[in-house]
Length: 135
Image 1 (cartoon, rainbow, N blue to C red):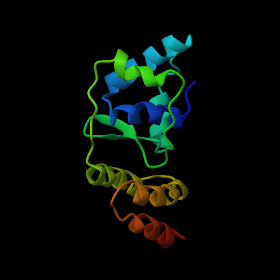
Image 2 (image 1 turned 135 degrees about the vertical axis):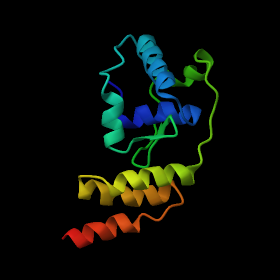
Image 3 (image 1 turned 60 degrees about the horizontal axis):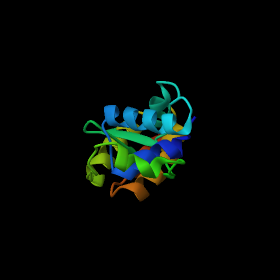
Image 4 (image 1 turned 90 degrees about the horizontal axis):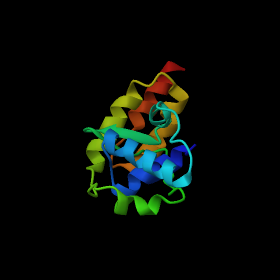
């Protein structure tokens, strides 16, 4: 099963993928490795950890990821007919910031807020300030 960072690496290879493209990439990679692509909820698990982010219908490597290419992934651009995409990092950062503000796990929100500020040009200090007010 691919790690969160490997899932992020697949997205990062293209810049961003639709969910359908991402599932095709996972399936193709698993086939090439002689493995199963992993459980359907695997993308949601990586989203919960902020290793993946969904923004405007695209899945991309998130602020908590250290994107790593799994073995054989470098062939995916030659196999899949998927364009490279650039995502507006500030807009994606604002999407993550809204999600962090509603996060049920304040420790996770605080931890990811620092990663978010390095990942996108947004100020996530309000997430940390909200945590201080809860204490």
